[in-house]
Image (cartoon, rainbow, N blue to C red):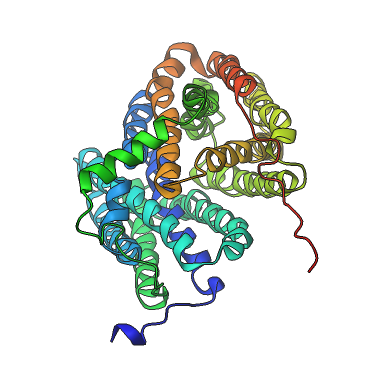
Amino acid sequence: METNRPTYRPPWAWVPSLYFAEGIPYVVVQTISVIMYKRMGISNSDIALFTSLLYWPWAIKPLWSPFVDMFSKKRLWVVSMEFIIAVSLVVVAFVLPLASFLTWTLVIFAAMAFSSATHDIAADGFYMLALEPYQQAAFSGVRSTFYRIATIVGSGLLVMLAGNIETGSGGNIPFAWSISFGILAGMFILLFAYHRLILPYPAADGPTLADKSRSVWNEFVQTFVIFFKKKDIVTILFFLLFYRFAEAQLVKLVSPFLLDPRGKGGLGLSTSEVGIVYGTVGIVALLSGGLLGGFVISKKGLKYWLWIMVFSIHLPDVMFIYLSQVQPENFLLVNIAVAIEQFGYGFGFTAYMLYMLMVSQGDHKTAHYAICTGFMALGMMIPGLFSGYIQEWLGYKNFFLWVFMATIPGFIVAAVAKIDPLFGKKVEQPQQ
């Protein structure tokens, strides 16, 4: 019976696992795939092109976010998408040993990306429906933390596992990645089963188009009209598209740079070492920077910290200029350099996330936040498309110099952005 279903469960019972599940398919499609394709012999230009094209679902998810709102319950959307993602991971594990693995995995990753983008929309909406406003604020850091933990598990532990299996199997790379994806699929099946049982059934969770007199088309159009009529919309769009213009190019070539032999300008690290450097040490630094960023903004507000965060996200890119020019053999030194860059990125990216929240305030905030994240994905996808060709043309040494020059648009859009002086700052409630 519907009335016997729990409308509330403690947030700790499901918020961490929900956002862990949200992070896994994204890191699979955008990070793990890069390392896997590199180990499978795909060129840097093709890796950057194909994996950047896989950003499309996240870039265009605003186009169907109103329909997720209008039809069915967010809970059903969440568990359905998790089932599809679990099946996709199983299929990837089976097709990797095939000669046509590239075609098959790209198709499956595309399906996984669309499911993941839909899951993002539904999960964020479910979070707002299942929790009171004060709980939403209290668990915002938990959301981010467990999303990042998913990144650690995916780009760190899973990559190290693949590297160890690769070594133990005598260099059988397809076998190593097939087993790794099989293990990841099993874990995701457990997440799907857990959420199907544990997620609450909020009373407010229902289709927004319950009133049949309202037109689907009018609701859809109105959502976008209100967003694009926002004040300073051109400045907003430029900020969303260009704040991470340099990072969008850097992130696609970091793993190939770490893996490529020294004769090709890389650092010649093993798969397991990359898992440690970028997927564990780097992600912990990224997470630490993000947590610190959220804390300091709550004290002084976004406007106060904006420029410090702009410098923080861009200046540490010089770490890769150093690594590419010197090609140090000291593994600890490589870890330190990557940790500095990732900490700065985590700290500086907080400003971007808070900016999207600020822009989304008002009517249709769930759909408007999805629109913002769509432009965020577009801002990562387009520069990433050509980054591999630029790297192959310039070589790693000059490529990272180019990336540093590409930080200039990020400073420009920050200079023209309009920021509410109080946004993000914790307001003390008056004593009763």
